[in-house]
Image (cartoon, rainbow, N blue to C red; front, side, top):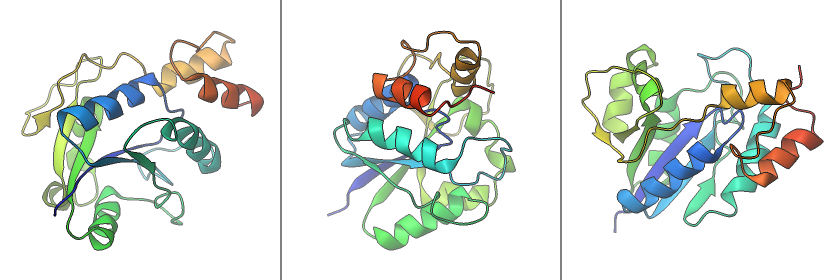
Length: 187
């Protein structure tokens, strides 16, 4: 029997309530058997990101409380740059009878043609898009997850931490505590 597996990847720097809302909504709307949260290892299109061990640990803390969610370290465990098409190829080998649903924010999908092997990505997974706040106009050839636009960004959270502002409404308590305990985003 084919299982439907959702894939929600990202730098998760840090993971926030918007990511959690996407995961829960995707599981329900898309009738997923499970959803993999996949923290990016060394994303080739981003330069300055927090150490992978911290990002993975924050995702792990959140994921353990979510039904049907598993955390994968396959991109973090891989040396060098990580590419979505390689992750999808690896998952197809590991789960050959599964259907993969790649969940992307409208900001990410607006740049999909700059990715390595974007056409291969489109053949290896069905893509569903979540609207992010902001104007990400796109010639939509993808399905949509129906939910209000995500108004939270990891950049906003990092800025608030740097300015000693509260992030309690933006992230789960476990993530807020982890950030504080480990002195993340202070400089």
